[in-house]
Image (tube, rainbow, N blue to C red; front, side):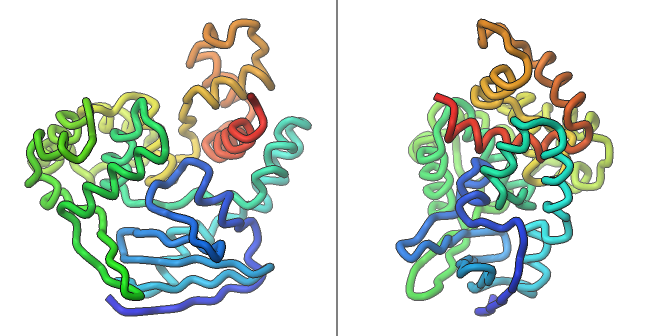
Length: 289
């Protein structure tokens, strides 16, 4: 690993708070100066912004240009996507305008599998704490700017923890699920490489659902945040609420079915529904009480 720096000017659709606080990632933390520091598969990266200039610096394995381009999805034209969404209706335009700086990160598949198993019936601060403790327990240590960071453990590293070890790290009822899923992937009962190469969203979902602790919502999150499957539409309480408030209009929100939401999302957003979900989720969480 080596220290590297990259400066990009006039980077459109790129706001730090929108990207890192929209619920898609758990290892990025805001600093006192407004920058964010994150631990990613390649190392430790800091991102800061001043007007239209974005500075990336950190200690990384690999070329920072390639890492940033891939991780922050810089090859996708978010301005065009927002223009398309804004034409749908005023509600979507309002959501896009509110979260104008969102980008979907391309995160590590293995890390997302475990992270979203941990996310079940959980809140973001607690999820972040559990992932941090697991990483400190068995992940590789990386020191940068006189501070120690810990990479998310590999399958082999995490497999060394027992169910009781995981329970001691605060995973709660998820301990057995994390343990079993890790063993399944270690023993190649479910292949990370195979999933990465699969093209069909339904087939990917079926493979992910074989893993302990992975239900449909968790599978959709994994596909969206690790595999760029923009046709997946994760549904949680906020997404149900915003879809009902803006489009379905059922007097009893709890009676809105997942099927109804999925059909509505596809009719509105088609193959880009996962991207639309992030704008709607971010807007709903901040504006619907």
